[in-house]
Amino acid sequence: MTMTKTEIEHIPEYELHEMANTQIAALLAESFQGYPQGRTHYKQMPSFRVLFSDHDELVGHAAVDHRQVSMGGKLYQIFGLADVCVREISQHAGVGSQIMAYIRNLAKEHEIDFLMAFSEDREFYHRFGFEVFTGFSKWLVLLNNHSLGLVNRKIEGSLLVAPLKRGLKANMGDLDLMGTVF
Ligand SMILES: CC(C)(COP(=O)(O)OP(=O)(O)OC[C@H]1O[C@@H](n2cnc3c(N)ncnc32)[C@H](O)[C@@H]1OP(=O)(O)O)[C@@H](O)C(=O)NCCC(=O)NCCS
Image (cartoon, rainbow, N blue to C red; front, side, top):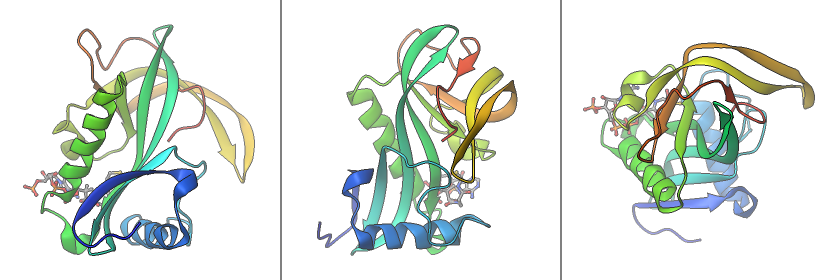
């Protein structure tokens, strides 16, 4: 797709073309210390990306995993967010907020129950309705492209959860991610 101005869009992972992948890898390497060079995801591919571009230049990014999880014994649909980042020279100009608002709107439009993100950056996420999850969580550990096993342990403040529907809360019992962390 040709982008000629500031634009925000979401693209399924399987539709990303080579140039988008190259730009995403460069932005992730610039944004996160130690991010594997030339890679667009850490361990597992997301479902789609939200990309903010300015005159064909990638300025902001979020990877989103659409998945079913279990919390308190009930099934919910979530958007799991990863690698939310904005180019350093473009930070504090509202791009990150636009990306979060875009994801939230998309999720609400499609009846998603929760947004979730593993992050220490609480100040940023709190602005968008995320609260700290405290409780046990289970997930699949991948190491060097192999499934290593399941972890089931108490999460100490690193998982942030935003409920999107009336009656839902960030803490509704033990959480089974039914897959890897995102
Ligand atoms: C976090 C990040 C995505 C925010 O993007 P942004 O475009 O600067 O966000 P906004 O301009 O919409 O800022 C909204 C508010 O979030 C908060 N915020 C922004 N950047 C922040 C940061 N690095 N740390 C903590 N809070 C931050 C501020 O309160 C900011 O308001 P302000 O600009 O009035 O100070 C960006 O700083 C970034 O890419 N950081 C490096 C990657 C990272 O750590 N990502 C964390 C999520 S995985």
